[in-house]
Structure formats: structure tokens, C-alpha cells
Image 1 (cartoon, one colour):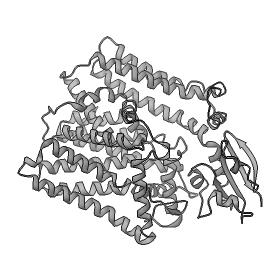
Image 2 (cartoon, helix red, strand yellow; image 1 turned 135 degrees about the vertical axis):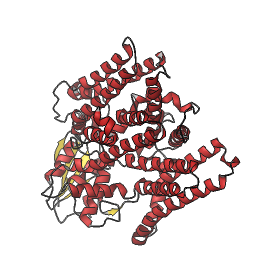
Image 3 (cartoon, helix red, strand yellow; image 1 turned 90 degrees about the vertical axis):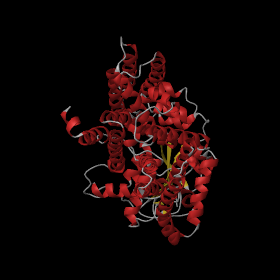
Image 4 (tube, one colour; image 1 turned 90 degrees about the horizontal axis):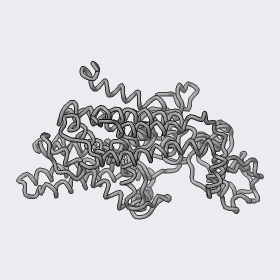
Length: 547
């Protein structure tokens, strides 16, 4: 392709646009995280306070503001929440991550090109594009892709300083990158960066080097810059709200590390499985390189840095009590690096495909394809499937009137056929693997465009339709008995009000007041004397306050 040869950066920008952007608005934002961040951005627009992060017009100490600032810019660009809006709120909320995904492709190509070759850069970017979870998250409204990119840039910049130790410019870049990472999601950015530097230093026995003082100076300078960036924002927040908000933030971080917060306690091997399944198909051939000693001609030891980064992230988040899929997402970048390394050697004949890889790809790929097929099949045969589901709320969710064309399960079948075609052919060569990766991209684009909106139709469309129907009305709408941010965003709440339980206990309210509960809510909520049931639909109960 001429564009690939003449302007590879334009090529990857166009590919990123074609893959990440088209279906950004195809489904509702999902509770909690996607709606949480979009709501914080919306409240910045409502209040005009762009310094503070708020939820329900109260200080929100869990996350710093950078991603929400990007969403604010996107909302303003697309006219979201105004009569002149020319795209959906969902599209605007996810658009920043699409740009982050495109930037990531360009950066990976650039670094791979600089330190190995043009071909390696292309294969690194393509590996990131083809892996399932990086693809999904680049089309979401979740913070982590931006957070990961800042940490990666911070580690890469320090790796440059490690070699060019007389250039403090790289230490400055590392500090700014990690500081921005901290302002995206918190001090975990500094923890992962510092732990990676420490483990790398131990591995390389830097204390034996004459330059150890210089290396420590660079690391200290980077760390101080990062902390100052983070502290500058928090100092302003503390001046506004008091030290209590800092205490809450620290307590939240400790809780995530030491307890299975929000029901996310998982076994220690959880993230290994997440990366194996979530980064298909590249995880099959990339994983073997994670323990391999360096054997490349790179001008910097990028392979070892990537190994250290991967294992530091995996070990830390395997030990942390709270385990959520995106906690190990920083592993995507080194994992895709090793995919590119394997593919480069495969293309040149220095690496050969083994039968064990075919078996692993066949087992894991077919299993994943079955999951992709089962999701629509369960929806199409919801009445039959519900008798096997013990959870009353989930069973009633499946009664939602979601339309299925009947062919959606074939998306998963297509993935299975693609995997089997790859491993059962007469000769498994480089081109066949490239086709597998390209097919994986197409399958996930189709799944996200067709099936994901229907999943939202079961899980949250019913209450969201209720919230949207009351936009602009002078009413209260609150949830009771379960945590949600959907009523804040989709009702477009304009100011603070008492929470659901407080309103429920009042003998009268100054405006019509509605409450949303799940069907398995406690009886003390469902049978409260001030409430009248107005409808029950698809696992949700809708009440009105009776004065």
C-alpha cells in the first residue's frame, strides 16, 4: 500500500479512525464507570466549576480531573446537552478515548520504528489494534487507556534517560508524563513507574555502575516533578473543600488495595486469565516471550523494560484485593510489544509456529467464540434460559423486549471458524496469522455495533428510558437500594438534592418525586408507607412519593 510506505502515520491515524470511531454512540453508556466519568464532566458544565470533580454535585474524591476535562471539551465540541447537538451524548463521552487509541497506535509505531524497524513498528501498532480488550476500551468512556499511555510514556522516557544519562530532558518528560498519569487516575501511576524502575535497577545491578548517582538524580527529578503536578491540583482542592477530601481519597486508595471493594474480590490468577482471553489472539504467541532473556540489537534495552513493566503490573494487581479487568490493562502495551517481536521473527523465518500454539489458540479461541455466540443466544431464548437462572433480578432483566434478528450468534461462530481456519490449514504461515488478527478486529467491531446495544437493552435500558422521559421536568428522581449514576446523567439533574432514602422518609416533598428500585430490593424500601408503586418492568420497580 502506497500510503503505508509514504506516510505511515497518516495510515495508522486513518485505521484508528475507521476502527475506533464508527460505533462510539451505538450503545448507552454503562453503569458504573462510563456513566460516572461522563456525569462528572457534565456537572462541570452545569456548575461552571472545572477545577473540582463532583458526583451528584458533591465532591468526588476517587478520581482526578484530566479525563473529565477531555470529556468536557468533547461535549462542547459536539454541542452535547444543547439544542445544537450534532451527535449523541454517548459518542461525545467516548470520543476522547478513540483519540487516545489513535495516539497510542501512532506512538507505538514511532517507538518501534525508532528502536527496531518500520516493520516492527507496524506490527506493534497492529498487535495493539487486534487485541480484544485494547480495542474495546479504546471505544469506551473508561479512564484507563489514557492512564496507561501516560505511564508507558513515563517509563519509555526514563529508559531513554537511562541510556542518554546526560540528557535531563528525558527525566523531565518522564516526570511530566507520570504527573499527568497521577492527575488522570491517582498515585498508582507513580507506584507502577517507581516499582518498574526499582525492579529494573535490581535486575541490571545499577549500584555497580559509575553512573548510579546520575540515574538516581534523574529518577528523583522525575518523581519530584510528578508529585508537584499532582500536589498542585490537590492543594487547590484542599483549599476549597478542606483536608477531609484528602483523607477520603487516601482511605479509598487503601481500601482498594486491602479489600475486595465493590464485590470485586477475585482469585490471585484472575488477571492471568483476563489477559489470556482479553488479549486474544496475540496473547497466544506473545506470552512465551515474557520470560525470555534479551536477544535483540536494540539501541536501548526495550525488551527488558517491557518484561519488567509487564511483571510488575501483573504481580501488584494480582496481590491487590480488589480485582477488576482494567486493573491489569497496563500489561497490554508490553504484551503487544512481544507480539510484534514474535511476528517480526516469524516473518523473517527466525521463529517457527509450534503445535502447542495451535492447541492453545484452538482451545482458548473456540471458548471465546462460544461466549460470543452464547450472549445473543441467551437473549433470543430468554424465556427458556431464565429457568436456569437463580437470580430473580437477572431473570426479570431477560424479559426486556429486545429485538434480535436471529443471526447475531453467528458473530461468535465467525470467530470460531476464523480460529479453526488458522490452525487447521495445510501450512500456518505469517500471512495467515495477519489474516487472523484482521478478522479479530472485524469480529469485535461487529459485536460491539450489533450485540452490545442489546446487552444494554437488558441491563439498563428500562430505567434509562424512564429517566430520559423526565428530562427538563421539575421532579426528583432517585435510586434506592442500589448504586447507580445513570439517573444523574440521563435525567440531566441540574443541582443537589437529598438522596433517595432521605427523600423517601419525608412526609412531603416540594415537587413530584420518583424512586427506582430493583425487584430484589429490601421490603423496608418496597413497602414504605410514603411510596406508591406506579409500574414494575423488567426487574425494576418505579415508585412515586405520596404526600
